[in-house]
Length: 376
Ligand code: GDP
Image (cartoon, rainbow, N blue to C red; front, side, top):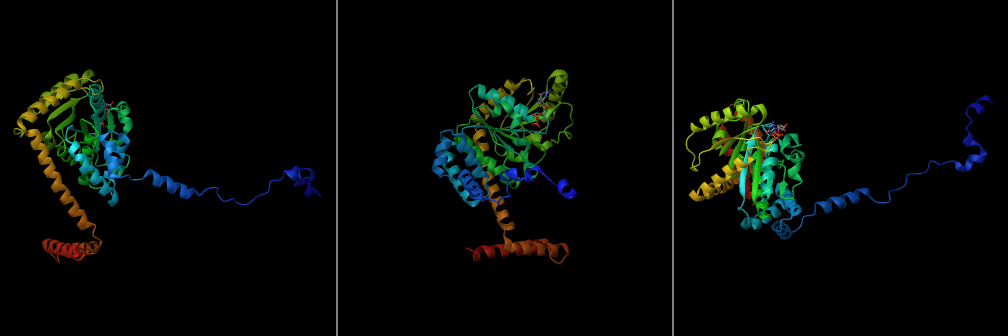
């Protein structure tokens, strides 16, 4: 009886029986969650006709512009097809903006500068699109150049459009998508386009090949090697700006300005007839921003008059045509599953001195052409 008492619980008394909660059985869901998710995904990703996009873009509709840019960035064949159509149709409305490349090592103040210069432009009634080519974004996913909070004021400005770097593919592929995005932004009425990149390597060449003016941001007191700026990049610059010229840094910035000016004198004269300028600014305190804008305007006036502006754009179009062919041919070859094994086997033979590199390459290419022919 003692045991009975120990395990007694008041809810087991007869008077409480009605309050018992039975365990029950699993109920089916009132709706099918999976199918709802699929439906929403489908709805979100719904691709409209090229007509709708083009109409929206030409009317300056930012949502349409963003969606079209997403199609440009997509690797899906059906998206690429519609993106090509949109671009072709927007092309006659493009080309009227001023395209400015901005580079410099991380920390130099690129986003602070873009925010400051960007607000300067929109305050004057301009419409600014900020695009980026960030070679690291594929690896890090959280793209450093895509972080909108860095440009808080600008990202809430109705006359500014900030688009992070496309993240997938080779640098050439990423750059090509950015170049196509320029066309769409211009058709949507943006009259100034900034293309930002981190000054650490190859991506500057890509940016240089799609802008009218190339601005290099530098810091005073940091050696060139420290800033990762190669001589070739300095040579591409139409202007160098020493940023953070404020507080007790003003004097150092001025000294650096003179040094860079002297360094630029050693370079051969530019094809544009323009002498690259070296300026100082404080992006954070909005100092010297107007002078930089005046410099850009003076450059544009000169090169529009002497014909270099159009010449540079033509050269860029030519470059991108061949660059795209090279890119496509390469990826078509390397993505060919039939050839993958053979390529790996030939590589081993080359490494084992059983085959020369050239014979291996020739045979692989012959096989590739053969494959193409039989799959026509
Ligand atoms: P990014 O990596 O090149 O985009 O550089 P950020 O714009 O993020 O700036 C890096 C740091 O430098 C931030 O702490 C900024 O506040 C600071 N900074 C940027 N511009 C200036 C400037 O003109 N003067 C000073 N003193 N600091 C600045």
